[in-house]
Length: 191
Image (cartoon, rainbow, N blue to C red; front, side, top):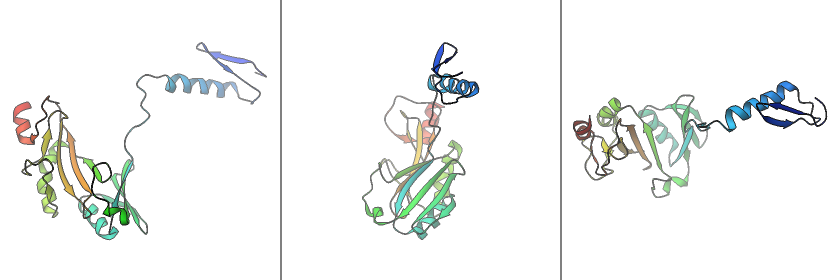
């Protein structure tokens, strides 16, 4: 093809200028357009890769995050990266005065996904590591708390700098009820 000739395929027309595009390159461009730009349900975002938290003492924070099972990946002067799921997601801890910013969920909160069966053991698992559970919803810390209309069970705790951490799991059934309850209560009612 030369000059302003057109390559047509599946009723699409692409001008082929004097860019020396081969017929194979043009067909590949058509393939990409057909398979990705108009494909219904195409989701470009596949997950969350990284999140960051401020810390005041990187050494102390490294010890804490290793204690909760994260694997240290890289350590630099004032920052450390831990794998949450190796090769898929990590957390960065940044030493600095930003750790003094008062807590707010939008800037100093991270939730780690755990399986339902592990959630049932999470309180004792954290206690074995000397980590105190937070009473986030003011109903006590006897066991994980469920938000029925979101179908989530969760436990909250803090890192050494007061960053709010959470173990969370998705439950199989969303219930139209806003009142929070313990996981064992939810299981009795809805399983």
